[in-house]
Length: 288
Image (cartoon, rainbow, N blue to C red; front, side, top):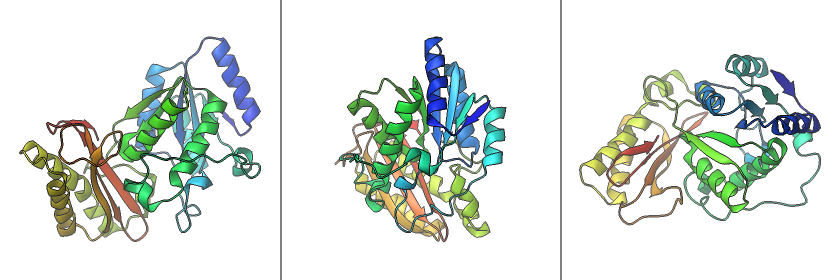
């Protein structure tokens, strides 16, 4: 496994792989790898000849007051985990490498962002699509892998790939969870002992909403209200949002007659947790 920080060197290796007819699988991350990332790597390993993992804590997707400076980092751990799971190349650029100067062209995301996390994080998805556009052009992957834990991000990446004609297949991998149902996240280490004990109720609240759908409830307001009451009775976190939207369009629906996403975000003292379930009009879970 190679670890490179230079864009030109990465591009040279990519060009050689493509000349040799190899397929490239790409897993973009911000590091501090956990089982969710490993699932992405393993899926990529199954389907491609050459696997590239990027580790870059992208400052453009952090807003004022967010956790850029405290975002967990462990480069040695990440290198070991990547090598043990079959990564061929880690691209580990610095901020100066990715953004050597002010950008002359800025990207704007006009759909799929004024809901869920995007509503309270202005500029976040502009940062996401900017760094991904750069990474896609550097790495030129055949397939790119994202976890459904951040389903809004998956929806935005889907739009980026289709709107800008990137010849890339987006592979959305189901959320990896702890044994008690909590979605795996690099930020979970910031939960207190008591917060960690009640965090699994977030997934249980979502499953409560899905069960109501199976029981015949079709109005989004009824389902979201039930999810809110469940969370308020079981957790001490502050609810940021509970939303039920079409997926992947992320638009409001009057009744559930198509695939939808039920998503929540909860603030604790040092961390904000997100989770979601995507399901169809029969209440059958598609991804989550």
